[in-house]
Image 1 (cartoon, rainbow, N blue to C red):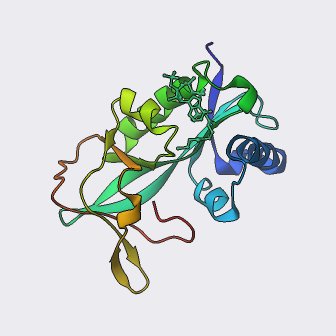
Image 2: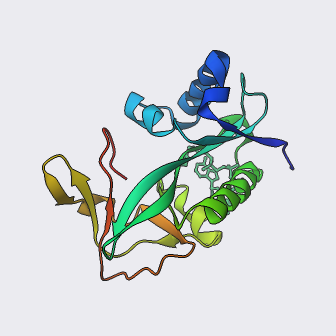
Length: 177
Ligand SMILES: CC(C)(COP(=O)(O)OP(=O)(O)OC[C@H]1O[C@@H](n2cnc3c(N)ncnc32)[C@H](O)[C@@H]1OP(=O)(O)O)[C@@H](O)C(=O)NCCC(=O)NCCS
């Protein structure tokens, strides 16, 4: 399957597009919460199908990830989803082709928090499971986030990564990675 994909900023989704996207995410994840929805907004959306009724989606948003003393401009991938009726036919890979182009062209690092089932898809495409320490900047200071080890994957672009050094993400409500 080769789908027609488009890239839109959140502002161009409009009301109908937001409603349609939330419907897809609810259908694909089952339990897509409001914090995860917030994480998916504010950057660009890669969409398959009409924005009011998309069948595939991935978002790339800017986050800052501290590593080795540098605040890396990071393209963080959120809300990767294919409608349940179309899963397993390659659409997820096509969405990721576009996502990776956006990451490589605009950021120093790509990162995402993978669900267990989806992790092999990313690893086959060259994303690296981050096995080093993970932490987050919080209102109370930097805290370790050891529970996330195994789920966080990175796509290095032009940032040297050292697995002995922590990746430290910026603060947000809901899941930090
Ligand atoms: C993960 C997901 C986006 C992949 O899209 P897709 O179009 O099914 O993926 P593709 O057909 O391009 O690739 C298939 C690969 O994705 C993974 N995959 C397939 N069905 C899946 C499913 N229901 N859930 C999660 N991963 C799945 C497998 O690793 C599969 O590998 P295989 O081809 O060796 O079997 C899609 O299955 C989905 O929306 N899952 C539910 C939401 C989710 O978990 N999103 C990922 C968040 S990190």
